[in-house]
Image (cartoon, rainbow over all chains, first blue to last red):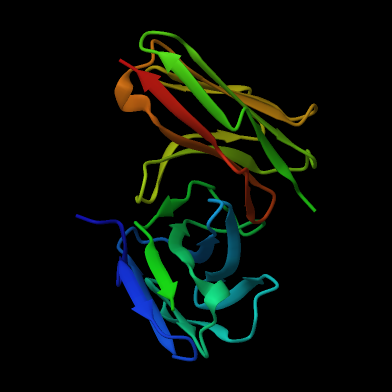
Length: 117
Length: 109
């Protein structure tokens, strides 16, 4: 039974298109994240939501918009895709966050590989 | 801004040898530190989580130490096996997780 699941796993699209990646966790966690892993395999946080409230918003183009309909879901919508958006996007979850009682252990999804042509 | 460095970037050892992977971070005001494993084309699997008050954590053949004052953590893998071949990532939690670039390990049979 998958703890953190992302869809789709692979996404190939043209520049200028809009796409979404969905994430769901069944761990009962209250905090979810989006990370981007670039071609050099470096992982950088993009967003974090705690109980549907945005708590971390890194310097990310505003073409990227996260949406959390409930604490078990965190979706990522990307407008006007650019070549540089090609990467693997990982969703993760944890119980608590930062100074809000974070137990710390993060659980990751399998990743969504986005290729922009 | 927290910076996390992992050395070496790559490591190749014969089966049975012990592995030592290093992680250093610049800001010692952390909540905890987590070691992950990533297989090619896969997500991250949590290996060990060390809280800031702890000095080490052990799980099977894995042992991770934390010296917060010097900004260092070391992951030891005893008696390496070919199945240990993967990229190992260290992540430091100081409100948000900051990752190192990883150490890619190859264990030769």
